[in-house]
Image 1 (tube, rainbow, N blue to C red):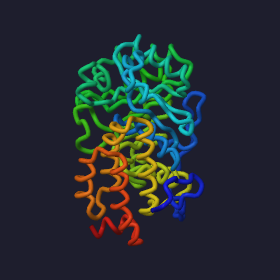
Image 2 (cartoon, one colour):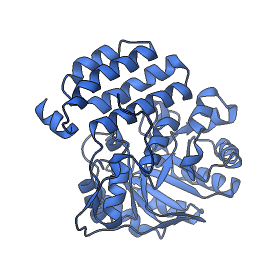
Image 3 (tube, rainbow, N blue to C red):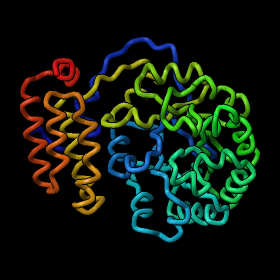
Amino acid sequence: MPSLPISVKGCLFFRQFHIQTMRTLAPIAIGPITIAMPVVLAPMTGVTDMPFRTLVRRYGCGLNVTEMIASAAMIRETRQSLQKAAWHPLEEPVSMQLAGCSPTEMAEAAKLNADRGAAIIDINMGCPVKKVVNGDAGSALMRDLPLAASLIKATVEAVDVPVTVKMRMGWDHASLNAPELAHIAEDLGAKLITVHGRTRCQMYKGSADWAFVRSVKEAVKLPVIVNGDICSIEDADTALEQSGADGVMIGRGAYGRPWLISQVMAWLTDGTRLPDPTLAEQYAAIIEHYHAMLDHYDSYTGVNMARKHIGWYTKGLPGSAEFRHSVNQEPDARTVLDMLARFYEPLIATGLHPAELRRAA
């Protein structure tokens, strides 16, 4: 079995070779905070918890954003909200994302997190999920710009740390008001805007419209981050070219690939194309991630939460469908670790790269 910990300096993943690039990114300032390479891990509920974010940061990431946390739950300090709000010192500076529809609650939750050490408060105005929207939060705020403005104003006035806003293009294609909302946010003291290139009504269907983000960039003097469907180096290049944005945010593209953000960062720094980790290195990452989830949650929750990650890591490998079916039925953490070893060790022994194994599957 390969060694389990990933060495930040020594991991074989950091072998590299160079090819010329036409595009680089400059550092951006979010208030007093400088992000040297603005390639950002997106907030994703049920995915970007502390175990996953820490692993992403160890490979390399410009900025981590926490899972979305409901401001009312944060004030009540529910167990779930505290778990979502936890971060590892390795991640600092951390952006804490809050959602809500009450300016008073948003301000109080923002102050609580700033007092705990959050470096940035991000306001979610883009989540399209029905439960959030029905509570007049997330992307529902794009239908009520006065309420959106009052949330931003209250949050900015409540904290001394920078406040940022994440939004969609608009509620639907008949109301593409992201440029207007971004301008309002800038006037109220927000320090950065992130735009997912879809409307709320699109949910996650269709393709992200990176070119639309250029209209937001032209509406403000703030740094703007483009988000949506960025799943490769080529996607990042194209998104930046079409949007004129100052950085990229990567979400679903990092499923099962916590190393993707570091690959995009290297490419946009100097044209270095980092290869994917070997299968042994990927297996080590999975085991580290799995143990971290068991430590972060209780064993029962950790096993259940890890199932989707195991599915993403193993997707496309020979026998992966059957393996996922079996492992998704297993409640015991130790048994799951044994199953992972039995799945990966024969594949590692082939000496083939994961891409070769997937092509052969």
